[in-house]
Structures are given as C-alpha cells and as structure tokens.
Length: 144
Length: 222
Image (cartoon, rainbow over all chains, first blue to last red; front, side, top):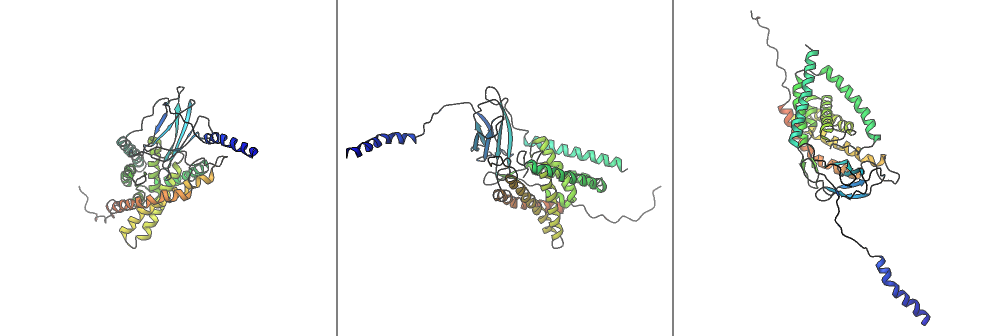
C-alpha cells in the first residue's frame, strides 16, 4: 500500500508543473514599426487581404498574415536593407513592394502616395492625344 | 483586372511577350496600311475615353473595386487590331507612368484585354448583328469584358502550378483556379453589363455615318 502511495503523491506534486508548461507568457511593449498602407485607387483600404513580409536577402517570409482593416501591413525590421512586402487579393489586385529600411531600422525616406487621380487623368489624356497627334502628323506627311 | 508585377512568373510573361510582340508588329503594319488620317482623331478620342473610364473605379461588396475598360466600345468602332493597339498603348502608359499594372505583366494584360477581349467583342457583335443591332452592340461590350476576365483568371490561377519554392509554397500569385475564377469572373459579369451599355451607346452615337453619294460634278468656278 505504501509502495503505491508514493508514486501517487509524486504525480500530484508534478501536476502543477505540467500545467504551467502549457501556459503562454507574454510581454507588452511599445516599439517603432514599419507601416505600409495600401489603398485602392478610390482610396478604399485594401483590408483583410493576404500579405507576407520577407527580409533582405531572405528566402522565406518572416511574417505572413493579412492586412488590417485600414489596409496596413505593420512589421518590425530587425536588419537594414530592402524588405519585400507582398499583398495579394484573390481577384488579382495586389502589389509586390520593396521597402528600404535604414540603419535605424525604420523606412529610409517615407514614400508618399502617387499622383492624385485628377493629375493622372490630365497627364494620361494629354500624353495619349500627344501620341495620336504625332502619328497623325507623320501620316499626313507620308500621304500628301 | 490589371495584373501588377510580381504576380506572374517568367514561364508566363516571357512567352506572352513573344506572342504580344508578334501581335503588336502585325497590328502596327495593318494600322499603317489601312488607317486613314480621318479615323485617327476618332480613335484618339475613344482611346482617351477608355483610359478615363478605366480610372473610374466602383467599389463592390467584399472590399474589391472594378471598372469598365471600353474593350467592346473600341473593338466595335475600330476593329480588333486597332482596339488591341489602342488598349496596349493605354496599358503601357498606365504601367510606366502610374504603376497601374506591371511592366512584366503588360503583354498578358494587352493580350487578355486588348486582343482576346476585342476578338470576343467583335465575334459577339457579328453573331448577333443579323438578329438585332442593339443587342449585338451590348453583347460585344459584355463579351469583351467577360472573356478578358476569364482568361485573366485562368492565367492567374495557373501560377501556383507553374512556380513553386522547394517547400511547396507558390512563388508568384498564390491562388488556384478554384479561387480566381469566381473571384475575378463573377464581378466582371456585372461590369460586363456596364461595358455592354457603353458599347451600345458608342455604337449608336459614335459610329461613322455611311458615306453619302458624291454630288454630280458641276461647272468649275472661274
């Protein structure tokens, strides 16, 4: 009887140790991250779409997940260089971006959004009419 | 529907550049031989209209956005090859100047929307024109958009089969046909309706009037 009691007592003593082995410690701290914000052409956020972040000269992504509700990919760079951020939607929208990170582990130079839509419209229409105008001139010279 | 850089592997875009280069060469030769100076201003205006329309995006439920492309409009008014060249010019401009659509993806965008879309539009138009002129114009716009979207979904869904990393993960676009076909084609069934209306309006309002008989020669002015 005593021989059977000893292992039972030892098992009971070990039980709390086994339980804490399944626990998960955590810390909370503020840090400075790289934030890439993605929007559609109309300004709507590129929300909840697949994204992956690959470090400089890295073969495998170090972060895989989804953009947040505001269309952001947020990551903490642990080395300087060109980080690759790829975002993909199932319908073919997306981008494959290179984000240069400096020695301070922050983006080296903030990248502003591209030209606004009115600027794109005016520029594009002007260039198209310019190209067609040149072709018309060339044709009129060729065929008097 | 403009595929950006990094979504298509070289197994796709290198052959596509070869096919597109042949098509561009053929189209340009045809343009030089057949296009007259009177058509060019009209082609310029409609191409610019297509460019503007592509920039007007409409948000859809689920977070994505779509836009009309004017494929059927261009194809019905100017034929397959002029539409292909015009749309290719628009895609080149968008890729180089604004980053809308990739440079590596340019031939796929041009072939899918410019060539296959135009072929589908003209095919639908010719098929239905004997039945009803307006229905034929509408069908041209719808078919051009849906055919382009279907081909684009097929090309995107092919990528995971063509290129994989040693660990099995896709190197380029990660979703297969089960995902791309509904995700790309279904919204464009609705966009096709808008493109159909656009082609109908363009076909009725912008098509050149039939040439009138030349007046009989009169006495020359002194």
